[in-house]
Structure formats: structure tokens, C-alpha cells
Length: 244
Image 1 (tube, rainbow, N blue to C red):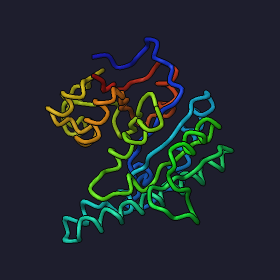
Image 2 (tube, rainbow, N blue to C red):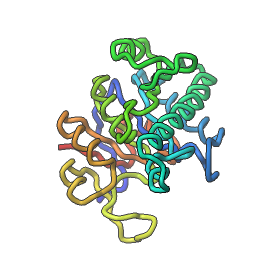
Image 3 (tube, rainbow, N blue to C red):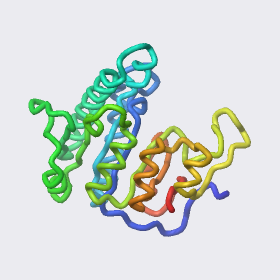
């Protein structure tokens, strides 16, 4: 397996960036770490400056995770709604960081909260992208029992994105945890069905199936690698492509 891509990569004009809420914590155990949020915002700006239209979905696990609340005895639907509200907080934090860099940004929530975010209206969201604004989709799908992975895949399809970029702690998809196993092997590319059959943990099964059914590629890369997001758009870098 190669360690770095050098071949020409397809130029994407519209993409969705999916990151976890934990990615915003930095070395903290909870909440948002402003320098980390600012660093990720700078990565987004570097791609936006290339002329790429960007929408984002950010998880809420740094504040509250619905499944954990449910496991501790809370009603699942209530716990999931709490998790959705956490994603809105993260979206507002990222919006502030992007706007401080001069990027016009809109937070669009699947749960109406008109004082802090726009409601989700597909045609309006598409128009924001056409005007080169960064969109952050918050509150998941607006329904319990669906993860932000599924929300990201749904919104990427609705926005006619050409790929989902999944920012993680590692530089792609491995056959086992590379932080625990020195002999873990990274895939340059892997099929949707293989991800499901081998439980590779890229996204949950519903998200992978939705991406597969709509032939939407998923690019898994390290969000901790400086310039990694832009590098892939420029045709280099290390990553795994999930496709048919």
C-alpha cells in the first residue's frame, strides 16, 4: 500500500465535510477548544479559497451523545434530541470561527430555532452554496434514531455534492485500529459493501447504504494533518476512497 497519493485527483466543485464533535475538543475532555476550532476553520477556508463550494455537518459528541444518554436510562428520543441541540452549539462555534476569517457562513437547523439558525429549506440552501457561502447543517435530520453520519449523507445527496469528506483522527480506513495494532493496513480504496461486511467503522450502516444507493463517494482522511483537506482537492495526500 502506498503512503502518499501523487496521481491527479478529480476536481470537486461541491463537497460536504463531516467531522465529529470530538474533533473540536482538542486535548480537552469536553466542549469546544477555540484554537482547535480556529485551526479547522482555517482548513475549510483554504479549500473555500480554491473555489470549492462547501457544506458541513458536525457531530455533538463533545457535548452530549444521544446513545450514551440512552444507555444510562434516558428515553432514547429525548437523548437524541439533546444530541441534536449539541450539534447546533458546535455549528454556531464553527460559524463564528469562519466569519472571523471573512467567510460568509450560514447555520441551517433541521429543528426550528429562528433566533440562531435558518430552517432547512433545500432550495434556499442550494442558493447559499451558489453564492459561495459555507453552510453548516445542524440538528441532524431533525428526527431521533438517526445519526449525524446519516444526516451528512442525506444532505450531501440533497445538495448534489460530489463527495463526502470524512475528517478523522487517522489518515484513512484501516482493517483494524492503527493506534492499537502496529500491523494495521490502510486501504487506498474500499467498496461500500466491504465496509459493511467487515464493519470497518467508516460511518454507520444507514449512511453507507444511502451513499452506495446514490453512488456518492466518501473520502476518509486525517483532519489532524495540516493542509490535508486542501491537499486532497489539489490531487495529493493520504486518504481512503469508499466507492462502489
